[in-house]
Length: 79
Image (tube, rainbow, N blue to C red; front, side, top):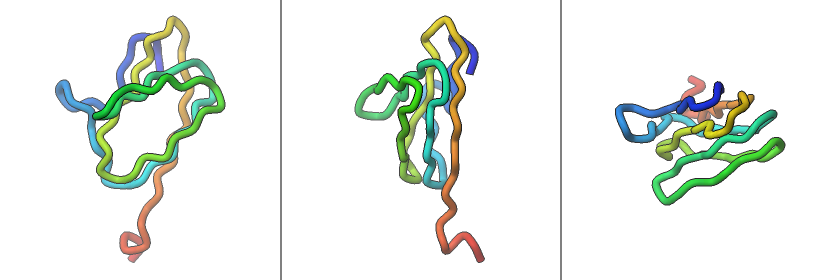
């Protein structure tokens, strides 16, 4: 994520994903924005977000950040 970029925002509000997501920050720093506040993430930090959790990722630093996002599909979605 390039410096100054915000990911997963619809209009001015954080977007809620339809599936669980695990995120691991590999490089740089990002701010995870949730309904109830913000959390600064640094390399090695990870979070697990349940489906329906509105969130966005903001790079407020001067360096690019690398974030790995993994989605978990529920058993009902498998078929």
